[in-house]
Image (cartoon, rainbow, N blue to C red):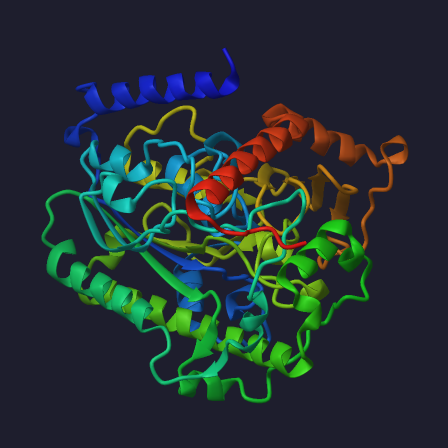
Length: 489
């Protein structure tokens, strides 16, 4: 039996048990502790005051930090929207659910955490962006409001061999500046969540889970004029540019070619960065509205509040923009948790991922989670040493092959299928300027420890080929059914 067939059989067996065994009912919930999850899109945590940025203002994130735990080294499962969010929804690694890119073709179906929680007595509500392997309205949450799903075929620029060029990506260069009605959809999501908390959250007799999903600070980097003014004169150039050795790694070169970012003008780079600063502060203001509503409704003291994001943002470092890289700026995410079970004003350096965040939901509600799902509750991790292993991976567009990342303590290995591997000591080299891997014959001992952990999770050579096989099938379907010329050499 191949691994994938075994996984599907495990899924079916575990779901049947959890959803039908009489032991897992509303009566198994010990306390009425609620969870509110706020997930933004494309927030690099290094651009926030709570993570030490010198001028980007995030007072509500600071407010959460004073009342809770800041996880200093949190990562996404994959630095791209659909694969990262699909892992969070399913509890699976990307190579298991096979959502490799933002293509929505030939995706499998898996049970999600909303179904698991609601069947065990938790009232689940989902508001805003979903972007997972199945329409959010079909994921068996008790309520879905303003759900956003990526339509078929999704992204069509997914060819890796040959590497395609994303058409019209150069237009992003000019998507910045002050506009009066910026991000009104996100305002609507937050207002809807606030109204839900005021009208429903306080009267439910069962514990509730509320997912609030906003799009900022994802591009386009427009911002309300008042916030734009705050950062006038603070738009700048990245400290580390295309002159750095990391910028010459084949995957970095691929990404700049794919997005055509080597053509960006200096004035637009400065404008984009100012826009990002303003959008992060706007994100913080939206978080503040949720925190205010929890205090007003007196729900705060028995509600766990989580702020995080689906992936980071390179923001011009090494000439790279957006995500699609396992370098720190694209793969790191903010993670702040406050409420019952979490200490106040604590910082945790153990590395974690969004899969650990998902496990936290089940621990909070004291209900069962499928044993084959990955991740450990943050309630436990907040007391662990920073030498914990974590794993993440990328199989999406913009680079010629797959990549896999393992971190333990200050050490980080990026195993690249079609380019030299990368090994960084993040304590000595937090900006990943010095690759310590040259060849296996003289690699440091830590390299072998990290590699062994990677191979204990999957064989990256096999998973790279499986990804390429599926991508080829998706491309064939795009050509035959959607009549698009998606490859431009």
